[in-house]
Amino acid sequence: MNIIDNDLLSMQEARVLVENAREAQKSLATFPQEKLDEIVNRMLEVIKEYDSELARLAFEETDSGKVEDKLIKDKFVVCYLKKKLDGMKCVGVIGKDEKNKTTDIGVPIGVITAFCPMTSPVSTIIYNAVIAVKSGNAIVFALHPKAKNVMKRTLDILIRAAEGYGLPEGAISYLSIVSESGSLELMKHRDTSLVMNTGVHELLKVSDKCGKPVIYGGTGNGPAFIERTADIKKAVKDIIDSKSFDFGVVSGAEQSIVVDSPIANEVKNELIKNGAYFMSEDESKSLGKILFDKYGNFEKEFIGKSPEFLGKRAGFSVASGVKVLISSQKFVSLDNPHSREKLCPILSFYVEDDWMHACEKCIELLLSERQGHTLIIHSNDDEVIKQFALKKPVGRILVNTSGVFGSMGATTNLFPSMTLGSGSIGKGMTSDNVSPMNLVYIRKVGYEVRDKDEFLNSIGMNREVNKVIDEDLDNSSDNMKLLKNVLTQILKETN
Image 1 (spheres, rainbow, N blue to C red):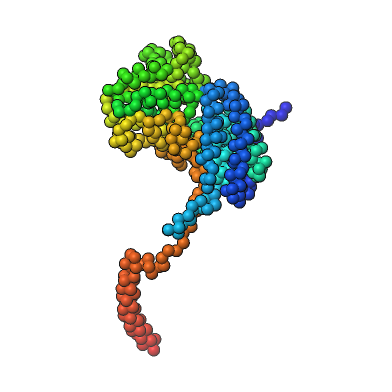
Image 2 (spheres, rainbow, N blue to C red; image 1 turned 90 degrees about the vertical axis):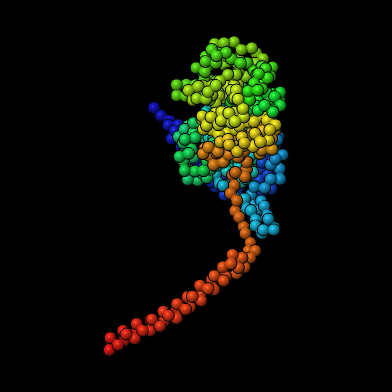
């Protein structure tokens, strides 16, 4: 009987893929930006023809979210991102300062290993592959076990399109034998230069220990604060549109609403008008009991599920028109499931006396799971906005916009990205909306603009140097006399 050890096979495949990627990247590193752009444009042109098919496959395989919203994410990358990348320089000479006589050279980081989530499998794969090639890097993907088929399909299309336009074989590849051992080997391999983990939280501890730089595009317990000067109708619509998008799986989506007390009733009425259902205390408790397993992990069966599904599983009825479920809360605690992050359309609702108390509540929520991702504030008071921006332990703060569309750069001028860094709390090396520029290092070139004497004069050192030299000459003369006397005495004693 033959026993096939998938772990060993996966590890061996990982080694081969990274070594091939290293050789491919050596060739890719010689490509000018124009050639890299040509390949990237071809990848985006071809994958665009398959976006509807891939959105449907992602929904069917993961059984989460909505087909139409997954298609929006895919089109965001294929169409909207392309405009941002056009003309962007990542490798070679990327900047010159004629006045200061400095030049910036973009240098690819090397081989990237990438881990993508089941929640946005197609858009994240496309995004990470495109920015890797744009910046002259090779990339090896580890597939998510709950989305491996649609990920394979997406990558096969991209690889075929890219290699047809001159991408070296092996510059984009994926681990076909899915296993944790293979994923670990990808991260630890000596030729791996960078680990890019987009929201695969279970691999975060492992990637932290692999000895490589890590970009962690994570999730987080992001609150939205509605301050008394806000445009309430717009704020509520933004929050509902955001949290109901793809049934709450996007990393930047709001997890809770913190409301200024003078406007609490108006906000609550507006939420109900826009499709929110405020659960009773008993309904909240019933739902809270089933959301997390005994180890405190969010139950995967509820990821990206509708309010109706969630209510039914918790034993109460939810009308078909409801977009989000809301639980009124007072305190933040890891023992309270409603003050934790949930990848589904559930929000907690807090009322605070003023913006200062709201500020503290938002900090509590952000620190409760230590995933400082995104905070949203709805306000027309610039001073309040400033204080929130200064004090919050978070990667990005969005003002008067939705968490989902603002964080990914659709309704803001943040870089349009599907990998949103959570580096503000020590998880990963950046809190940026990750772009091709996070995948290169900058080589600095500086020309002489002043000679040494000019520099010394500028800090008043030439006079000091001359003074020291004069003192040394005086001391030298005294030392010579002393040396002569010592030698004379030695000669006398010898004779």
